[in-house]
Length: 171
Image 1 (cartoon, helix red, strand yellow):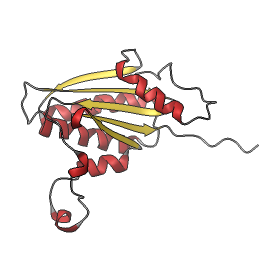
Image 2 (cartoon, rainbow, N blue to C red):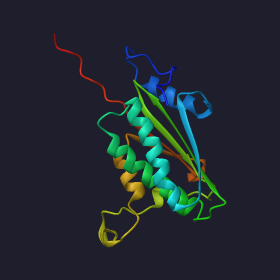
Image 3 (cartoon, helix red, strand yellow):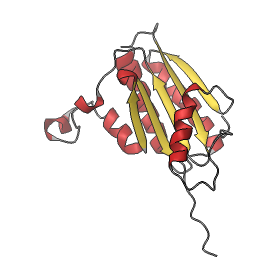
Image 4 (tube, helix red, strand yellow):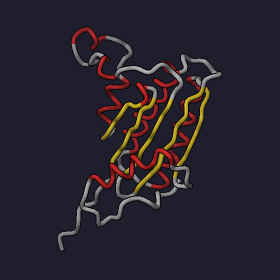
């Protein structure tokens, strides 16, 4: 994965430029994008996340925030396998990621499931949910990533981790 050549200029002052860049990435198939397809098995998640994270570290587009991205990837891919594929190895989860030096890392994960409504998931930090041993993935993803969207009736998650903006020198 290389930094995407269509990434907004470092001199841009309009934050919507990054939104437009992220939206335009859906149909991109350039060399700046990494794509994986994994079988609907839990065992496939770890190696796929490791492969993506190695490439993310090489590019450095979310330097200092790799842990947050890795946890969000693990949770989102595990959810896609567990709920979208229901552990069926004949079903597949597709993942793609692209880096932009100015905007950050965009990751899209799609599964073949029926989808879900994220607003109907109960908070894992309230009431009896505190004691549950599962049900924290979506909550974690939303706190670790800067922008999270569910599309295609909940069978696709789009996660953006914004790039580190280095403060301008005060010389």
